Every structure is written in structure tokens, then in C-alpha cells.
Length: 451
Ligand code: TRP
View 1 (cartoon, rainbow, N blue to C red):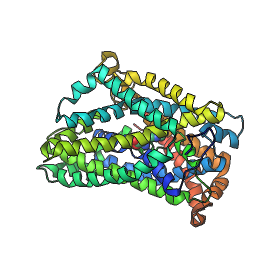
View 2: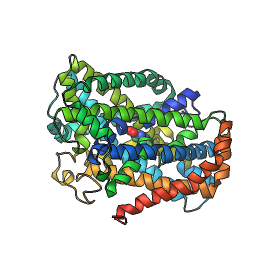
View 3: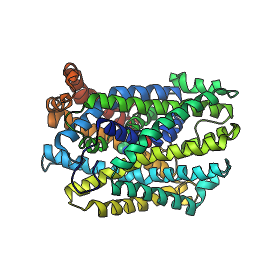
View 4: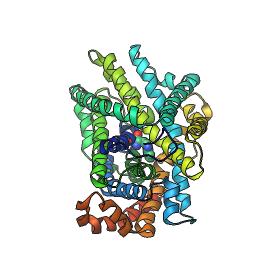
């Protein structure tokens, strides 16, 4: 990816692209958001729906974003404009750019908590998460530090540092998770957690389960706001978009699934309830570490790796608005990175203060409780992290399927992936009919249409 100059760049290799895109996909969404949303939505039923959405909707939809990006080599707004100049479709691109800022504003806050927990683990202090996130100066400071790290990397270019690091650190995270799964499942009472996580009870489906599972699928795969358009724009024509997307989806889903295999057994072994919301992982995991021999070391390592996973995601979130400003507004990359990051930091402050520091933002009742937790951060997470992504994906699948055309899109996908020839028909059906209709019905249901 470019960074050293204002020119558009390319990934240094196929592995580089898959790593960067997986790095974007794998993050707090898998380890922090997935378990707490699953916990709030009945456990295994949610997991089943989530898996269906990832592979039937998210994965085929990812082809569309990647193909569009690679075909016209632009940010989301520029890409739409290149296919359908000066039309209202451009608004979908703007929505994507703004959604990136919206997600980053609360994601950066949680990334700051994660970063701070490295030091809390080193200090051997496992309790008191509630007080920790209610401390206004501390959370704002940690948020600022994380935004600064993100900015420095996007500023300086991604290929050298992050691509190389990720190659070592992501496999380490994987191995550590496997170890934690084994340990967590030896705890007394762990099997009740496994049952909650893996044995679906279909009576627990509620009206909001579908949107939560769909939103989480898009969120976790980094879809619905044009990130994959932007990352696809740096991919060369020789590369196979189909196998790349499959790798990304499988890695991403495995990591989220692993996180659940750790959290739920531990949670039930501790006799806690699964619907605690955004604080779940931060309350549960440190107690697991406290029980383990050498646990504080493991805990510190865990939060280091999770911080890196979060960093490769925040980089991608910042990259979308930056690419937009560089391509469309001819901004200087080095200046605009600071401006966008600073703006995002300001919008993020209410989220940072919404976990106890400010009464007003901690008890926020704009959206009904069935849709969102009643604090500002949960509102942001629903509006930008679920609704806006689903809506963006609806519009973009219609745009690719009907305006650009499934045929043109299929031709692009097929370049570098000759085997796609036999799947063109089915993919055309998915992108033109199945995906938009299912997503539309789920969005409609937000208004309680189907009860
Ligand atoms: N997918 C990331 C995660 O799971 C979050 C993320 C990064 C994202 N970039 C995105 C979500 C773009 C939607 C769109 O942590």
C-alpha cells in the first residue's frame, strides 16, 4: 500500500494483500464484539445465523467490493463515480467514508482500553474494569495514544512495518487462543458455557437477532462501507480475488469462533450472565488469567496481540477517508491523515465518556433497548457498526449487480480466477436478488414489521 508518496500504490504481494485485508477483518470485532453480541442474543442461535450470513451473504458480497475496487482503482466515492458519473449513487460512497469515521470513533476507544490492559496485566491487577473505564482522563488518554499510533502508521505507509509484523503476530494470536480454549474448557462448569454457545435453542430468536447477526457479519468482515473497495484498488489483476476472499472469511470466522470457545466456558464456570454488553471480555478474561499459573504473563501477551489486531483494523478504517480525500479532494496524504484522525478523536470523546465517566452519555436512551445498549458507545456501535454497514451493503450490492452489472463484475472477478467461470450464474443471482432482498427484509424488520 502506498504511503511514501501521494501516488496510488499496490500491495507488495498476494500475501501482503491477504494479510492486510485479514488484518482489517480480524480485530476487536472478533474477540470483543462477537462474544458480547452473541451473549446478548441467545448464544448458539445467534452463532448459527451468523455463520449462515458470513458464508451466504458476506463472502459473495466481498467479491463485489473487491472487484469494483480493482476494476476502477479508486476509493468508494471515486469508484462509484467512475461507473456512474455524477449520479446520486455517489451518496452511498460518502456514507461509506463517513461510516469509517463513525466506526473508528468508538472502536478507537475500545482499542485504548485494550492497550491500557497490557499494563494492568503487567501490574498484576485483574479487577476493577468498571472503575477503569469510568476514569475520564485515563480513557481519553489511552484513546488518544491509540489514535496516534494509527495515524503514525497510516502516515508512514503500511507495507514495511505492518505487513511484516502481522506475519509473526497474527499466528501467535492464533496459537495463544488455542491454548486458552484448552485451558478454559478444563474449568469446572465450563460445559454449560459450551452448550449455551453451541446448542441452539430456536425459541430464543427475537426480532433483533437477525440484524445483530447480519450487522456483526458485515462488521467482522470489514464490509458495507467500501473498505474492500479501497483495499481491492491496490490489488493487481493477476491475483485471485475468490481464493483471497475465502481465506479472509475463513480466518476471520475461525478467530471469532475461537474467542467464543474461550469466553463462554469461562463465563459459565464463573457463574456470570452472558448478557453483560461491551464490558464482557474485559471482565471475564482477566479472571481466567488470574486463575492460570503464569497468568499475568499470558494476560499481558494476550492484550499485546489483541492491540496489534485492533491496530491493523484501525489503520484500515482510517485509510478509507484518507484515500477518499487524497483521490477526490487532492489533499496531501500527510496533512489529511492528521486532520481525519483529529476529527475522529473529537467525535469519539462522547463514546469514551459513556461508560460511567459522564452520566449523560452513560445513560443514553435514543434507541429502543431491544436494538442497542443504553449508552452512547452502544448507540454508535449500532448505528455505524450494524445499521449503516447493512444499508451500505444493500445499496452497493444493487449498484454492482444492476448498475455496473453482474456481467461486468463477473468478468473482473474471473480475471486471475479462471475457475470462477462456473460460478458466474449463481453469483449473479446472489448479488442481484438474494443479498439485496435478504438484507432489505432484515432492515425492514428493524421497524418491527415482522414482530
Ligand atoms: N473488521 C474489524 C473487526 O472485526 C473492524 C473493521 C475494520 C471494520 N475495518 C472495517 C468494520 C471496515 C467495517 C468496515 O474488528
